[in-house]
Length: 277
Image (cartoon, rainbow, N blue to C red; front, side, top):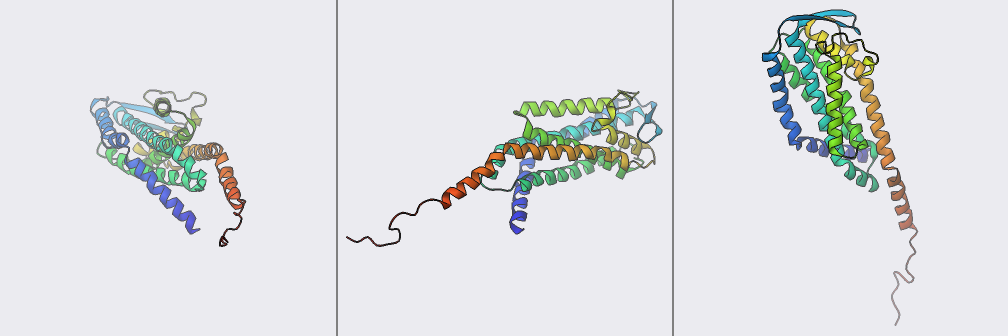
């Protein structure tokens, strides 16, 4: 048990260090999120719009300016989280395979990535929610934070899965950017006022987007709506585990075969005895 805990803590520390060394992601977090929200705040129209939340069954009336800020915040945190987790997973993939070949336990390696994602989720959620608060008094700040966290987990899980599945960095970056761009555009009441297209409800941001918008302007309970993205997190994490297990399926056999070969090595004749001249 102690060995397993040590393996997990070592893997987690190296995963967090890898995230901290991703200067592009750190710069995007510090500068891109507040810049994007600020630009929307000073440029978007302030007229009121009314849109329906189909999951919650309510109509919401809010400023177009504030609505776009919420959608922009969702896009910013999901693309940054997906990019950060993908790069960390992709960069460490070969090393992870070597570690498994050397006998390192698979569960601890994947658990470290998931726990690191939880840390990233907490930090991004608090940071982004605090950036929205100066624009207008959020009706339910904690519910908005829960919606942001759910969205980050969904796309963070996608980043882990893509890190094990895709062959190149450019492919992963393109997948994360395009997936978040399409998802946010389809869920935004400004770019997609109807919001009744077939299959829209299966997208990762369907629940978090409606929850964040409703919680920003109403007192309706939105936590169950935000949780609709958590199955995406569970499915993508499980798929990442399966992909990693398939990629390293020969490593366990190699370790076992090597150990058996070492045990079966013949003892040299006369070993431990003095030579008689």
